[in-house]
Image 1 (cartoon, rainbow, N blue to C red):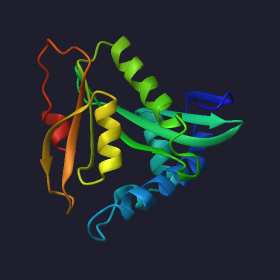
Image 2: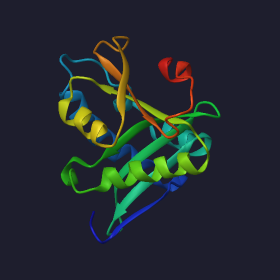
Image 3: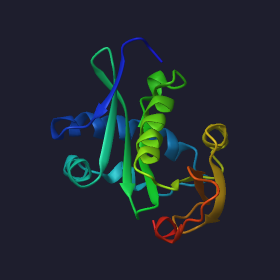
Length: 171
């Protein structure tokens, strides 16, 4: 991470910049799909981002005053949180920005007593799958509901306690 990195809660005024970073990151994600499947993040509007800021948890990463990454967190149940629309500007990938964002939401989930954090990603995007394995996520299951094989990755925050993933499996 650069010495000028700051992670903070998003504000409504950040919506356009979050949208730009998210679209850039998901264009790269889309290019890793085996076919030209539509990716919902690419059809998002600034109003969608504002709704997420109002209803869920959204963090942004700024480096030297420039918004370079964002992550969203939905609290599905009292025991399960879900990460979505997690992206970093492709221009600064592999610099620790994404790891900082992910650590922030995992720390928050741990403090709030969640038992697990889940997310979906393309199971054939090997670089991304390796990244999540390195962050101690594991593949719980896969599905083909979006036209490609999506893996449900889970990070257990309380490994000795049972949790229900059914709400994450609906997303």
